[in-house]
Length: 223
Image 1 (cartoon, rainbow, N blue to C red):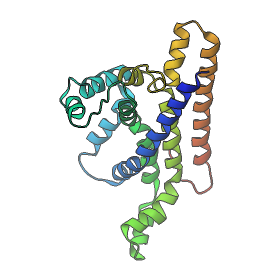
Image 2 (image 1 turned 90 degrees about the vertical axis):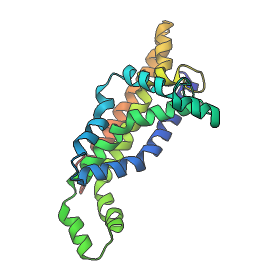
Image 3 (image 1 turned 120 degrees about the horizontal axis):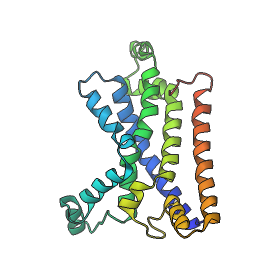
Image 4 (image 1 turned 135 degrees about the vertical axis):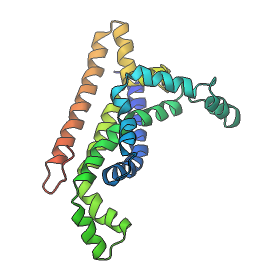
């Protein structure tokens, strides 16, 4: 077991979930309630990371964030920040890749909240913020649990984007999935089995948490 890679993986997953949770709640609620004609375009862009091969997305992130790009050169010159082959760049790529995993279950939960509850709250004098905080969030919590669980599990198992943007730097960008690949390449199948079983177990735990939250009494379904 590569504990150094495990530490990088868990830290990356935790930071990704913390960043995406408030962003995901705001975007998911807007997508659930909006009648804008741009909603299909926004949902299509949101779904894109699920359909594109990870290496394609990783390639374009590598090109757009590298020092040969305008953004990468500006960040390196003015802020002394290098995003490619660094943990910061890996985190940015992880946030972009995992956005649909956070947003989709939360969006479905907000969409399942009966509109009459919001209207009744407004009639009773609650502001839109208090309605969101006291009515919508308590009903949509299974979606939040599902979004966080799926984001954590997917971040731990992501390979293509991690390798393209972060590379394989021990202690900084080498995650469990990269370490697993290295062990297979070295024919160290015992260590590979250990890391693979850890990733399988974490994925099963995340899915079990999603379904358990969905079946709690009073929960708004996320499917």
